[in-house]
Length: 393
Image (cartoon, rainbow, N blue to C red; front, side, top):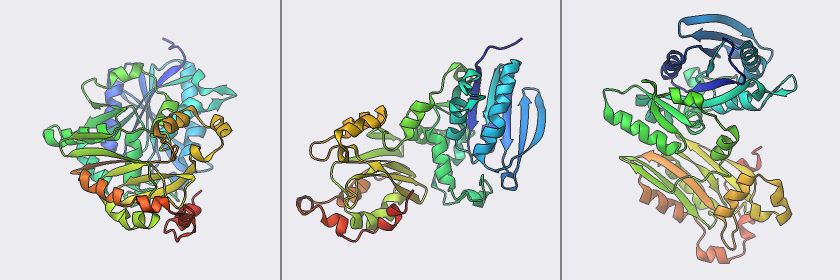
């Protein structure tokens, strides 16, 4: 039987290899004619990738793929996309399940399968991303969001220059998809409940389902919107929930319309980052009045970088040059006098002391007296963030 184009694709990602493989096996069993494709990147730094094809009956093919430039993007571009297009044209397989490598973030795969071109034609001619799923081991979720390990420490780096942390990669794997599959901890309801609460608060857009019992089957008929996923996870446009609580797991989004004092924020950084498992968002620093800054913290690591100008710093005509999502976010953040300049930082943690955290953050804001002073003093004053922010790409 020949199946119609475009062929359906489900991407299954995740740091936890056993949980990921279990979710893939569940899909293979649930969908007759499904084929799984997995690229093992364990030797990618040596220029070697091992590609495994398997169906519900076992391995169909195992091949070595030699790449000129050893990296994830060239694996997707040079092997995965052409392979799936070729298989889709044959029409022999009903569903393709793309199982990622531990350290690969699902956005790379989803956008390669949805936005690239093949022989001058959009890849959507042949392939439709039905769902993006991240599978997790319930008992490891909190520990891996809190770890200080680097990817290289666990031999999970996907390139020789891979300097990402485990917590950073894991957080992005959790926040991008619209389905999260939980495996394990069946004998400990408390662990499973805590895991589900963390996942739901980190990614309110995702459905959290068990990795077994046919719960993944309905996803096969869906459609994954890569543009919506990008906007939802972009710190310049994200609109996180104000406050959530489930047992010990709590999320709070700190919103204010005054700038942060650079020296006071710098002094409080360790305290603020350590308060939660994950924090992210956009913020306004008095020493950078026209620049939106991005905050991205996971585990004990914090990254800050410029994300372009606040829209309030641009002439009205420039608004037409930014995305609809960015304009909508600016409208929601807008206040008289400040425009879209704001603090919008979301924190999620187990046992998070919300009142204390908010108190620390509020103490870092400019006071009314400081706001009434000469605003140029903040650009002239010594700024402990200047070196990091000025050299950011």
